[in-house]
Image (tube, rainbow, N blue to C red; front, side):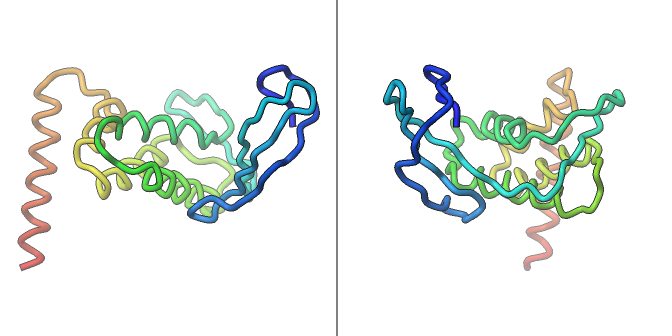
Length: 159
């Protein structure tokens, strides 16, 4: 594994252990040249998935894009990193087990919104504001009202 500090090609694994949700292996490494330590994660990839953007552009599925978007939506919300990791791993598993080599980016966005709805309503609205391209304050108001109405219906079903 190439060192991120000095770009030397060889590093030594000092420690390996599974992540908390058992979806990856966390490895602590040490560069044989400069001695710097760094962490890598090894994950299973079932197949190569292509994401089809709304404009028709195609790119490889990239888990880190989902991680960054979810982390940004959850910023300063007190959502534990473990919950974020579980959400992202769940979405990745869904995408990989769908059986399709190509998936529309809109489908991934809906998966993220569904997951965030269950974790934190503010993070859900934050993500939706970017994903659905809110342009005015009334867009937020309408979306938040729809969430409150749906929450009221869910509470009524629980009675």
